[in-house]
Image 1: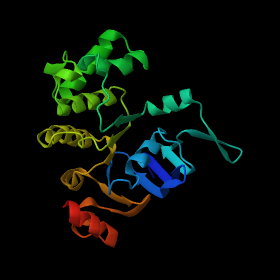
Image 2 (image 1 turned 90 degrees about the horizontal axis):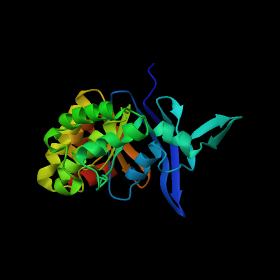
Image 3 (image 1 turned 45 degrees about the vertical axis):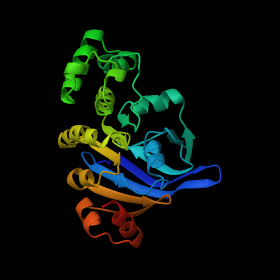
Image 4 (image 1 turned 90 degrees about the vertical axis):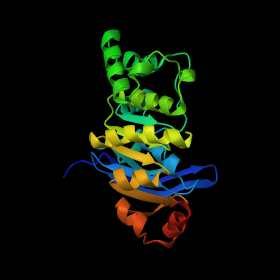
Length: 254
């Protein structure tokens, strides 16, 4: 049996009196692309942020590549790790947000070089070569010296993907990566994500792009009100959803 890349067991999370996640289970195997869909407020983004401990969990366990994330087990109890230990765990987990979060005072090349230089202590020449290779991979080698303000939204998001890949993660998380883009720019970002999936990268993608989920996803997870309502093969879930709530949601978005 291979170790799952992501193993979430009964994840609970509340903000104040609002219970956002109410026992979410998900297993993603190495090389799989899991797409998470659902209405706004269903807990999709919160769950994604729990995978790399950007949000702490109130109950349940989260493992990435077999290791507890954010906690260590001792004496039958979970103890939260120090921030430096959590940061070390996050090196294996790349994340791409709705908003590109690029450093505005750095060029595309400098944005991609920054983490390998500061976190992995890569020599400048090596970091530059790696960054240029990644910018080429996302089709932006010719824009390496441009600042974010000189790039379109789609180009900025592709730089953000290259930046996440620069840490050589084993898992990539995407939080609605195309939702902030003009419709004509969505395709260029999805093309990069398709190439990533084809290369064998394990991905968890919160998305509204049903065509991408159908074409690229190995698993489709429909969430509503903090629980997984339905999960399965994307083609099967999208064409013949079993649950009434899934049917109602898909009737509005397909």
